Image (cartoon, rainbow, N blue to C red; front, side, top):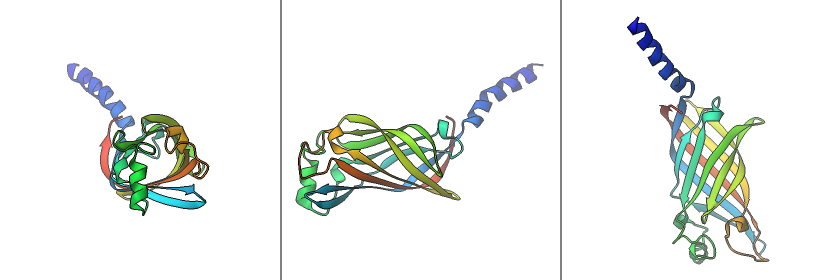
Length: 184
């Protein structure tokens, strides 16, 4: 009788972990790029120093979570002077705010793809942004890709100007490998 009670208790403790087990992914590469109009010209750039925590199951969206950050000091636009200006306090203030971060609040299906509400934090300001993304898996490897637009002025980047667009288009492309499962 004691063994049956003990077995039942163990099963009850393990059952929820099995139900909410989540695939964890380790990023093997991550690219965050952007484009914005400035004086009528499209300026493109990218950040490196990508870090992430990816717990995602296409059939377990309620218990999935995606989190990523980039190092602000790694910004590259192809123009060294512009890069230094962008690291300054008028733009990203890389000396004070070392990273740009996104963290999922809620993930869901949207048509044939996925989307999520994400907290996007730039210069200490956090705004919730819907980010549509695709997830493709081939065996133990997967790719997360998303494109979205933010208003740079919502985050205090660049101030008011007539020559630079308020909207910046952002693209995120993360390749990852299955790192196992974890209980959620």
